[in-house]
Amino acid sequence: MTDILTRLPQPKPGIMDIHAYVGGKSKIEGVAEPIKLSSNENALGCSALALAAYDEARAKLFRYPDGLASPLRSAVAAYHDLEPERLIFGNGSDEVFGMLNQTYLQPGDNIVTGEFGFLAYRISAQACQSEVRLAPEPELRVEIPRILELVDDRTRIVYISNPANPTGTWNTPEEIAYLRSELDPSVILVIDEAYAEFADEPTWETSFGLARAHDNIVVTRTFSKIHGLAGLRVGFGYAPIGMIEAMERMRMPFNINLPAQYAAAAALQDQAHIDASRQQVLNWRPRLIQEIRALGYRVERSAGNFLLIHFDSEQVASDANDHLMREGILIRWVKNYGLPQALRVTVGKDDENRAFLEALARFKA
Ligand code: PMP
Image (cartoon, rainbow, N blue to C red):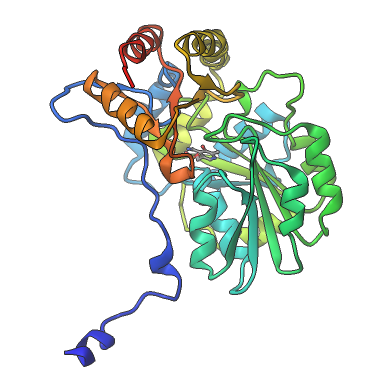
């Protein structure tokens, strides 16, 4: 018997230590249409132009998509004023992190990120038998000196999400520039800007400029948030040519499917929708913060389309989560991010935000 068991296919060392990624909940038993504020999606949905382009793609579904996502590449390059040959597209920015890890990590290497950093950075790093080093975030924000303390000669990649999920905090351009200047040029610095469009603080800036000027910086963006296309899975990285050439060897053929290429390119043509999506968050974020604080909870300032709310204990956070679910509202208990006393709520549509505030007001710890 033991003999048979040991002969069964065994995963590589480390695979069974990985915590599989679990997305925000999308269902509540017995509730037909819950208010879903659990995954930092776009409350306004996607652009009508993106939907029309998606429909147009139907007639082409029997064809393979453009392997290099050429029309989408041109559209992104023009929109963000980036060199098209310095872009790599992924099935969500998640896949870009995966390609980075697979291209650069060997067993025994390490990546460094913040304690509450986005979980997707870690998964493929562990699969590459590399160590994941987490820098403490006592103030719930990435502290550059603590990142640097963990960097050694086996560090290949440092991941910073800016703004960060789930904390909503951000790092200043000076901090990012300092981090870069302290890293050996052989270490890759990835700045994940999934929430860039929602950051309106004067102390936040995109790192595209820094990436243009240096050979070890990668900036990632996604169509899942501001463009409301989370379901299509499109993200991209802006990286030095040499890195793109290496990562292209790891990219799965045709990884961006045809409707996704059509819809994402069209989304960039709809500036009115982009502006409205951003404005929805900018209008509601301060109002939600104020009202949640008025209910007696600590809530962080946030540069993303979500807020982090703190409760007195893990039990109270869990009870509040259950209470909101009973009221038909899904938010995210961020226990698996290492924040068991906190819940993360995405900014929703007007009526959804009001319903959330009313339901939270009815919660009794
Ligand atoms: N980075 C951060 C910080 C995120 O929160 C998310 C989405 N939850 C992503 C990247 C992944 O985005 P995508 O949908 O493009 O894979």
